[in-house]
Amino acid sequence: MNYKIALLPGDGIGPEVIEQAVNVLNATGEVAGHTFTFTEGLVGAVAIDHTGNPFPEETLDLCRRSDAILFGAIGHPKYDNDPSAKVRPEQGLLRMRSELGLYANVRPVKSIPALGAMSPLKEDIIAGTDIVMIRELTGGIYFGKPRGRSEDGLTAYDTCTYSRYEIERVVRLGCQYATQRKKKVTVIDKANVLATSRLWRETAKEISTEYPDLEMDFMFVDNAAMQLIRNPSAFDVIVTENMFGDILSDEASVITGSLGMLPSASIGLTASLYEPIHGSFPQAAGKNIANPVGTILSAAMMLELSFGLVKEAQLITRAVEKTIEEGIVTPDLNADNSSSTTEMGKRICEQVRAFGG
Image 1: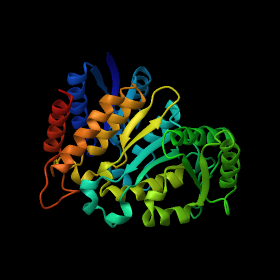
Image 2: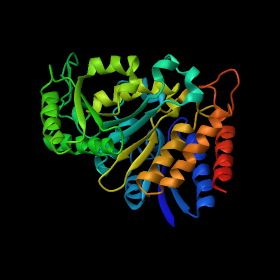
Image 3: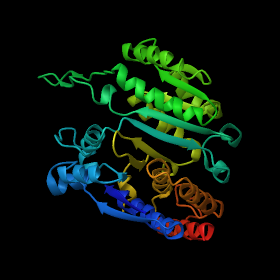
């Protein structure tokens, strides 16, 4: 069967890691009898440079025509270092989420025994960690209005808003994941201070009655930030609002030893988008040192969640783990004895063909 995939390489290291994911997908297609049609679109700083728009209409149309979207990274220092810039790459990502109805981001965080020594946390602390973090994507302070600055520029303001509907759909998604796992959901909020968090807690408690076999507990975000470091294996499925999820999922990435290891899926009302959680890392762009694993595992999530190709997704995951066990890793995981982006990607392709042949 043929699957149509929109490729959005984006900025910085995005094109390099997307290239390796495409190679792995093609290798998987060869052994499993599938074909993938890839069409590239512009997004981010590169889109601003070419069109003046961080998410052009042509890219939006491409995404809507595709079965799934594979995205690299977004961001460039010339915009990061210019507070007065009216158009920014990140605006493209926010518009993408809004236009495509990408309402929930799913980020698995799992300790890998072969990388235990590379984590800044002690191996006995991270052992057995297997978390799915689900972050609401289209509400909260990132989208709330009004926002802006006073006329004199001395005061700035943002608005955090949530509707019951936005909360319900992401909490239900978390419960659905938990039913297939250890049957525990932790809802993270700041209900002792924020009105939106109190609505989150109230709504989640109501939904919990629909899932009597699940255990649902609640945790303030400051405590959750501490517990993720002290005892990460205590969590199963985490559900939280947009900004809290943005911060906590990046914090949890240290468990694996590198941001470059973690994949994610943004679940949409029509198509879904898959991306590594790392940024554009412009300092590494063009140096062939970026870790492609997060993007490759995002492609594996795409095969499973969008196309129902569970065995093929498992094949990619197995190939990645075997490559890491062999010590073929990029400098972020082993600065003293590292491989390049292309070398690691090539070896993962070889493992896919070996396991799938």
